Picture 1 (cartoon, rainbow, N blue to C red):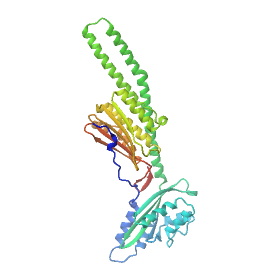
Picture 2: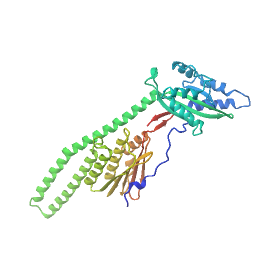
Picture 3: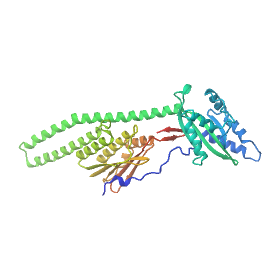
Picture 4: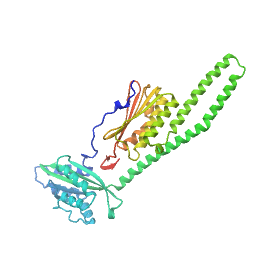
Length: 394
């Protein structure tokens, strides 16, 4: 069996999560109701219908024609525009030109809107959305702007919707903070257990070994000597097992050594203490260097090696790190008997799978015949991740 994790990596399809986002629920409902009203035999002005539908909505909504001229706005849009001092942002104003002028004046939030509208006009996409931070009286607030192009009864329109998503962003950041704190707590608890095992349990086993040696040297029958010899073998295996568990529970510190150094020390120490053939291959290429990502990959390798030791009955294990243009992969490959189902239902790797998903990554587990392959993948750079109607940095 050739233990080469590099053979397992294929670059996934690239693309951003927000290239063609779906319209929000309020937009979808408004469009569906407008089509139902505007398309019967009776000729009804779609703009008037849309105006009636959006007036009571809390989101700031505007309807634009195919040239980006504002046709209708709701009350929330009008009030907010007045608060910002943009009272001219009303029907008859060209929204694209307005954004372009604001971008030229140095308004950072206007530049993505200009770029997104250009992409829609060029046919690259039908919609876009992005987050931006408010300023002045809105400092501390986070907003999401959505622009969607649609065609109704042969006419081309666009909708612009603006949401205040401050609370949702804060909730997500709290969740990520709790997840990080949980991982730190688990790591600290493992280190505490490892210290206790080393300081107490191993010392007791050492004392037991000395007592067995004295018993063996005493005048006993050959049968008793055979029993003592077998006990010594079991004692040696127990000591090696505890040393392996203790090491995996208290591995080299990532912050002190960096990802590459910590993984090299982890794999080397794992091989020495378990007797397995353990290797690490780090491929030259793009590096992973954004907060939280290195720690997640390190913890996954740590958990995977622990499972290999406890369940796989393997003699070889290989770990690989591979950077690609859009994704970064950590691969763990062993030649064992495979992982029992209860391992994947526990709290270790399932927790890592969820954490990877929060960061825009994924965890793949495959049978290698023999052995098991675990592939943990993360974006090379932080992505914007869509959650419902909210686009957030993963």
